Image 1 (cartoon, rainbow, N blue to C red):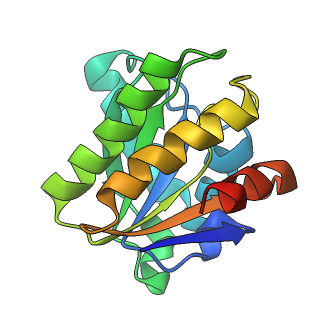
Image 2: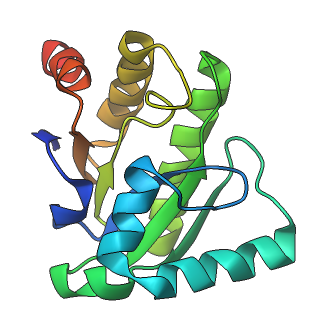
Length: 162
C-alpha cells in the first residue's frame, strides 16, 4: 500500500520515519529539524554517537536511531539517509533502496518517507518524486508506505503517478 500525505511526517503513524539527513547528521532544518523537535534530544544524542564512530556518512548511506518521544505514536525507528545534492538520479535511487533494505533488516512493516533531496538539496522535484514513487511502488507488497511532504508540488507529482 502507498498512501500520499500532505503534512507533517512526525504525525504519521508508521514504525519507521525517514529523515532526509546530511552527512554529519546535523538536524538543522527541514525534515531533520521537525523530527528532532517532535522526537527530542535522544535522537540528537544517538546521531552524535553515530558520527563519532563513522566521522561522516556517505551519500546514499542509511542508518537508524531510536524514535525518542515519537515512540508514543508507535514509531520504533528514525531511519536517516543522506540523499544527493543536485539532480543525481543514480545516487537518489541508491539512497531510497538503502532505506528499504534497512527497513527490511529492522523488521518494520510501515514507513513514512519524505521527498529525499527534493528540498534544500536541490534535486529536481518532478524527477526526484518519480524516482521515489517508482521504488516505493516495487516495495508496496512488503510495506505500508506513506509518502509525505509539506510541498504541494511534490504531492501533486506523486498523485499524478498513483
